[in-house]
Image 1 (cartoon, rainbow, N blue to C red):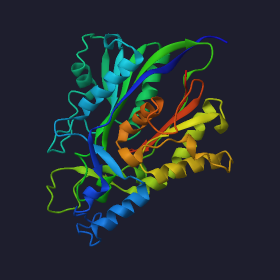
Image 2 (cartoon, rainbow, N blue to C red):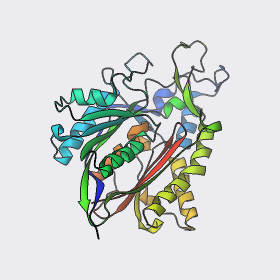
Image 3 (cartoon, one colour):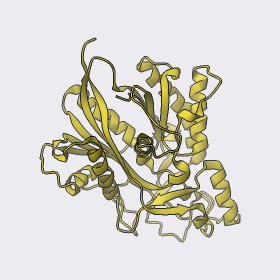
Image 4 (cartoon, one colour):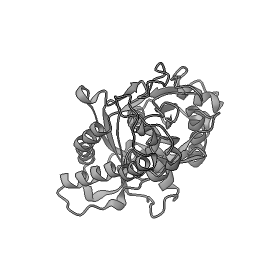
Length: 361
């Protein structure tokens, strides 16, 4: 077979903030009914218990006062570079996927200038001027889309080595008076990708993406707090959870199947599914629908590792963080081995969906 260039992951790292925030900390929050500017009269204990029953999130991680998204990105990048045994000066590119830039403590103001990728390069003290930097903003699927971009760079022969990072600090842009604030978390995950010449397929084998506007375009957007007494000039995340749930279940399984088909594989060839950690029950339902598309009745839930119960939804960081934890045997009962086929898939604001088929070298 003819040698081809493939994109392989040679190192990974993740930055999980130190502050653990359990659901109990939200019991005394004054939550308002969506769009009505009227507080719920439901006891806080009931709100938090129902939330956990629906999402399976028991706790999440928040940054400390001095940390920003780029700080988390740097921490994960250092670990990934060390894992890959790669000198930072040999990087051809850095892509950082995120949504809000470096939001500082006490503010919801988005800071994307300079780009987080440039900030990461600066904080890593990389002197090589040829290390090109840019950001990718595609909602929660930002990191998976950044991987697709990196694959295009490498397959085209433009670059050989790069960092692909997903980093978000959602705790500073969520509405403290919206129940959805309990979903969001902070974190970062990074991988080093490199070009590998091989006569057998390895690394990224195939991918599929889609974007939908229309009624789904504003299912996730920035807006004012439900609390009329909250500073209305400060924009926070507004989410139509049910609409997103319906969209995810109706689109993600098909995108995943198309990516598997593009790779020339069958569902039976897939060993692991690394899915965006948004809502555990939603993710399980997506997996069930993937199996249904292949007319397979027995669903093997063990192929889909989860971290959402402890880490919450850190947007672009969930998939690379989960991959790093499994790769380093930090999730009980989960591991990956050479030759296995895995899926990276995500859904989020836009609405955007993507899926990558990756073979472990």
